[in-house]
Amino acid sequence: MGFQVLAMMGIFIIPIIIGIFMSKKSKKASMIWFSIPFLFVVGVLIWWVYEINDRFIADTDLATEQIEPFELLEDMDGETLQAYGEFEEDEDNPVFENMYEYDDFSLGVDGEEQLTYIEIREKGYETTKGLQVGDSIDRVEEVYGTDTYTTNETGIGVSKNYVDREHERHIKFFEDDGVITQITLYKR
Image (cartoon, rainbow, N blue to C red; front, side, top):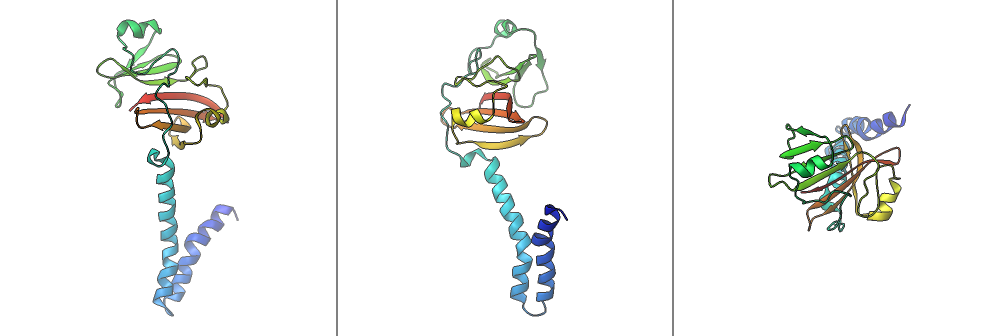
């Protein structure tokens, strides 16, 4: 039997069976046994909320964080966008008023034509602290610290996330097999 089957039996099935047998002798003992699976599920949910929520971690100073050659909040008129090469405009993006998809990166621009989202998918673009796609994910905590939380986004993968609430900035480092595959910097 696998570990998952044994764990499922130990956490869910056995306490319920014991609770059924105990119900004839003691209602109190029976309720305690019946509550074990419920308490386990509640505990897992609390842990999950803690792990994916950025409210439970300390701030990381991202006030000057950029991904060269892009700078958050810089003006992005049509001429500036074309200077970075050919792009396709994503008109169906639910988050950003204007999203521009290039081969190696994507840029999100708000209604005031300011850059509010940078997504890098290829080498050649460095963060202010010197990280780029292709670097080891282990370097992220060395450079940015341990005040991070992890998420798993469908279709993209697992990421280490840092937040600066005062300056409303977030940076995410997505990884696969220990290597950074994508870096996202955005202003909330």
